[in-house]
Every structure is written in structure tokens, then in C-alpha cells.
Image (cartoon, rainbow, N blue to C red; front, side, top):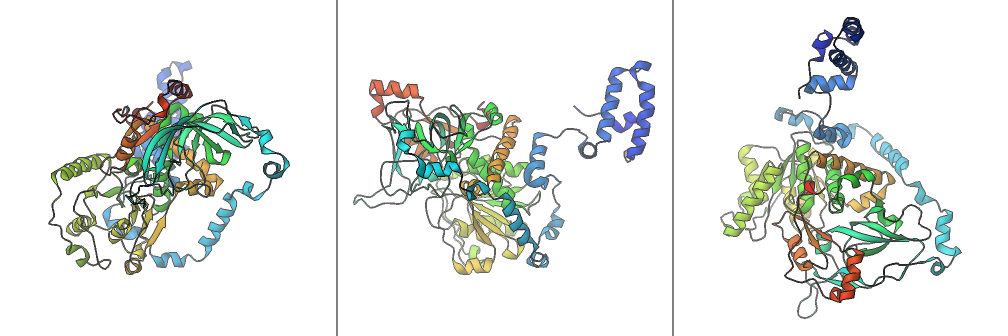
Length: 573
């Protein structure tokens, strides 16, 4: 519904000063007051007009949009990076003026480093620098066995176990891990500082599919959502039935030694979990909340490394079609009016690679592009391309060679930021060929776990490019500063508002451990042509007891079991 003309209601021009608005309002109030026979509704509207035009922020919004309230997209843009994305798209003619070169940074002098150090001093976690009586009690003053608590649940619970892929001679091979779901016993008692969490949902990501395991029978999973079943005698910050997000410190656990969230009951510590606020719980289901780390990762990538991007700028993505992270990046780019250029490199398609010097046309013109993809791969490419464009992608390319040829034909500027979510041996190198030179503040950020392969970049290419190659880990970011935990929850609440307004969605498919085939879930998560995010859900403790009583829990999940329903992220209420 369109807003009325508040300037006409008061009787002033659009450029009227605050003094003129107040003077005219007093005259109108005396003439149209209900006590003097005026219309009450008209008088109420007159008061609203006065409130809008005398409030600077409301007046600016009304003059710009004709509305007095912001939409969900505008609120998101205002909160992103201090509101720097809440502006009109920059015209192409202003591209050159928007670039900050190295001379500009040098001219600023050393103040940036000093300011950054002062900010770090303000935000550092002082609690980690002080030994409290609680810390001392943990180490010396009592016998932990005497302070332990007996676990109420008796009997084994479902575990998703992984083993390294091996050949006929027992040698480890690259690729996805071998998995199975089996009931296993749990601890009979928890220590004074431990917490027993009943897991509800665990996202199946690359860190689980390609875990670097050194032995078999390891419980997988580095994150997930659950409710607290029991707490140790010295745990004060959490209570039973609190909803928590498991997000351990990377210094304690890794993909070689995961915390093991893919089980019905998990024993962990206070610093391994984050409390979920009631606001988020009211709007989202556990299956949605478990994807919060992925969504926040996409948000922080754009906010931190895209600080100099403006609406209308391009950004290069190579994993937009893979799981929740790519879909989240696309939708956030669309909300921020950025233009994603997506490389869709599917398995089975011809491998055209750029080889040679950075910035040289011969590096990509000599690539053999005559090979044709099989019909099934072409169908996958067309289907996923249409989906990427509908989600906000400006253009989709089968490889980096096709991207540079398109850029050459259309005389487009190369992007300054690339996000590598595939993280294979050559993925970052191909992205670097498609970026602007380093003196244009060009960056390539590796954020994906990939297939546990080392990133390989030829030193001459890196030297010729001159940009910045960075890595990002959400777990390390969250635990690096106490302020980042608050930032994590704040971003999650902002995304919740977008979901409520149907401006953000993620496709998920659910597999219930103990009923559905876990091997099918891992195969689907490893499929690069499937954009759905696989989420594992777990049986209740009552179901675990029933399965153990019937003796059916000892068997692995049946291979013929059908997967759970596949609702959209925004439709899960």
C-alpha cells in the first residue's frame, strides 16, 4: 500500500526546513483538531506525517523510496558491513574511480596497523588470560571420579563411523571415506565439566565425506545441533534441554580427529558448544539451525573480503552449485546487488585448463575446446545453469577458459574477488587467471574443505598476479574473539528474518540414521551435480531403547530404505 504525500498533508514543499514544517503543523493542528470538529482519522494521519518529516532518518527513507518502513532486504543490506551495501548500483563508468591502488594505501601511513592493533586489544578475550578458581579446581583440588555423574540412558546408540578408503593391499586411497551406521555403547558417567548432548541434526559436508582418517571406526562430524540431556556437576552456563550448536575449537579437533557429532548422544565440554537464542528457536527447525555455520561463513566471506566491493561489482565463484554454502553465497550476493560469475565444472565434462603466463591470451586461446560433453553431462549442466541463474548468478561457465573468452568478447572487467569452495589441486590456480592484477586489490579466498587435496599454484603465476591468496575457517574465526560469537548469533538472527520474509531458502534432504541408508547419504553429498544439502537426523532415546530391545539396532541401515522428505529450507517451520 502506497504512503500518502506527507508534504501535501502538512502543506509544505519537499525541500522545506524543519522550522517551516513545525510552523505549518501548528496551524494545521489548531484547524483540524477533533475537539474543533476535525476528522479524527485525518488528524491521526497528520500526526504521522509530522513524525516522519521531523525524523531525519525516516524523512530520508521516505524521500528516497516513498515508504516509511524498510523491507527485509533493505534491513539486511543496512546491517551488512555497517550499511555500505545499502546504496544504488555504481554505473560502469565509475568502475575505474572505485579502484583503490597500492599508492593510496601507502599514502595513508602506518596508522592502519596501529588502529588494527588497538582494536585487537579491545576485542581480545581477557577471560582466557586469567586463571580462575574454577580453572584451578579442574586441575588439582579434587578427584574427578568422585564428581562424575551417571548417564541416565543405558544401552548403545547410533554412530556414523568412517574408515579410510583402501586398495586390495590395504593402502589408503584418495576419495570419500567408507561409512556405516552402527549402535555403540557410550560412557557410563560424565565428568564434572562434561555435557551430554542429544544430537538432532548434523549437516553432511566435505569435512565428513573426505575426512582424513588414519584408522577405521572413527565417529564422524564436526558440527551439529542438539539438546542438552545431562550436565556435569560443575557446569553452570547450560541447563538440561537447552538447544546448542556444536562448534568446537579447531585446536582441539580436526578432520583427522573429529569430535564425532554424528551420533545420538555426544559427550563434549562447554567451550565446544554455543547456546541458541529463543528468537532463532521460534523461527527455525533443528535441520535449519545446523546449517547456520555454513550460512554465516558465506556472510563473513562477503563482509570481510568483499569490503571494497560495491553494488554492481562482479564476484567469481566455483562452488555455487555445491551444497548449502554455494546457494547461500548466491542469495546473499543477490540481496547485496553483487553479480556472481559462476564456474560450473561438472564430473565427466572436458577439462579445459588455462596454462601459461598470467594475463596472456595464449594461456587460454590455445586450450582445446573442441571436446564435447556426454549428453547426460550436458543435461546436468543446463539444469544446474538454469537454477544458478534463477538464484542470482549473472553468467555460468563450464570452465575458466570459457569465462575468459566471454570476458574478451564482451569487454568486461575481471572481478577482484574469487571464492574457492572446491579447493582442489588446480581450482585456485584457475581462479587466479580470471582475476584482476594484484595492484587492484585482487584476492582469492579458499574457504572449502575440498577433497583433502593440497592447493598447488605455480610460483611464477603467483608472482605475476601479485594478489593475495587467503584461507578462511569459520571455526577458527568464531573462537578467535569473544565478539565473534555474538556476531555469529547476530548474523543468524538476520538470516532468520530473511527466511521469515521468504527472501532466503536452501534445499535440504534428510536421512534418518538407523532407518535410511547412510551410504546413500554420503554418495549424494559427494555428487558435485547435486545442489541439495544433505542433513543427518537421529532417533530419539525412546526409539534407541526400542531398537535395542528388539535387537534390530545392531544391524546397519537397510540399503533399500528410502530417503526422508526433501523440504525447502524456508518451508521448514
